[in-house]
Length: 114
Length: 117
Image 1 (cartoon, each protein chain N blue to C red):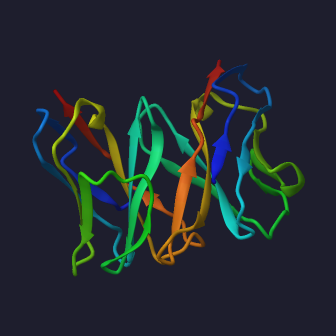
Image 2 (image 1 turned 180 degrees about the horizontal axis):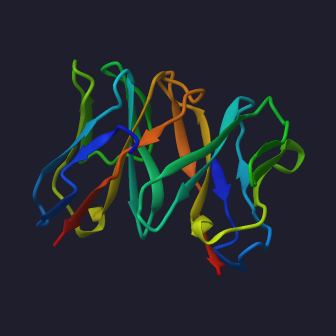
């Protein structure tokens, strides 16, 4: 158990809908990262937040947004969902903002868009 | 632009064989980080190692070893005396400085390793 929690574990929804994925980092970690793993695109980095502020942006679509709250949990919002958004979404956390810190991954949220 | 290539899609070995997973990367930055992650059949991602661009020392951790060669832009991973529990997908990744001070990471396509008893 990495100490990173993600909810829900599974999510099934329809095209055009909006969903919110939630991530709670390990105690003491200030950075949260979001990744998407799909059959088509493989594993991709989406975005990183550090202590409430965006620090790095990867291949995140405009239909997707994220935020990190004062209690350091993070939410990834996916809107106008398409079939291709079906994927496993991982959250990771680390103590600091850079890559000198190990990232610990949550179990993932599996999103299925029908 | 960043790129990470794991040319081996699948590798199958018999237990106790040594196996090397290849990773070749492209970057224009002089400061970057390389990683290996393991994703066992259960699906979770496990961090294995991080190496920065200024440290070309090879590393050994138990049965695992990593060979970083800047001259060939490679960061290969060797498992010695493989075990069935090593069966997993292994991802190589490259991190470069992002646009707002943090780092963004790009992953290779992964190499699926099967270790047969």
